[in-house]
Image (cartoon, helix red, strand yellow):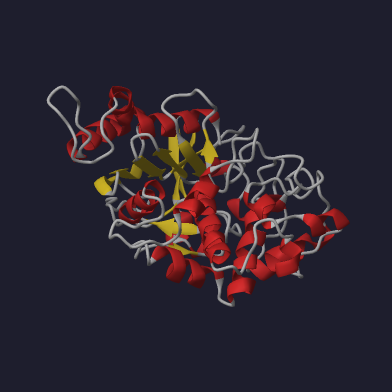
Length: 383
């Protein structure tokens, strides 16, 4: 993620909460005293509106939760089509999707149908590479991105984009590993393409259907779906890119996205997601969707690393303690952050991507050629 964009989103996510966390307020949406500032809808609105005015951000959706309560879920500004953004405006969350794919895998683990430390090839024989070491990649290594696969060996976004998970996995047959499985960490979207295809094969159901029925609907996320490509996102994931101090509305080029960055959701639904993450797998309505152990596994990285399963943790000693993940498309940025000590959750999706290059996007290479134009400095990776 571009540094400036990443820092802005982190500030937007955390600034209203730092004071509350530092004061040690109880982990409930209702517990405030006259001496403690309150975390409520009005304070979130005031902060976000001021931030948007200061930065000229066109539009965003925000969800804030505390304990098992929704503090606030809302939309601000407007879409690239000029419509007001609300708590029900569908937005792509890019790589926030990875945490949702990981939870789908954990559902199968709890059912005894998948073992995290078994090679993925055993469940998914079609997953083969031009490197025999790939046969030893475990399910856990896919989810914590230590499989040995990497952009340096298989730059997926510079290749013709797949249409289905079956195609995405088949396309990897000629690829080699960048490292022996389990020895290096490399952020690589195809790890999650393989994990999503594994869900399909083991469950016998399309990945999007499994997510909807086993994860989203049980959590009360009734307006959330997973799509295969950015073309299937609302208005082709149309948003804004920023260049030379100006905003340019753009539809997104077609990228394959299932499993790695294909979820479209709303602020209302993101609030439900955050509550379950901070509530040990129990929904806001009191329904247990996964065990507390599964939540803990997805939040806990291997020893000596910071990346868990679709979540990253802050280094030891950094306060407040955070579990988070960012996401970006060319036209959208997203972040989800958990503050476990106060059981606070924050998610923001902004309809602006950052771009850097020698020419504004209005006169640059036709976006229909992206991402094959891999040498363009204005083509950030999905994260």
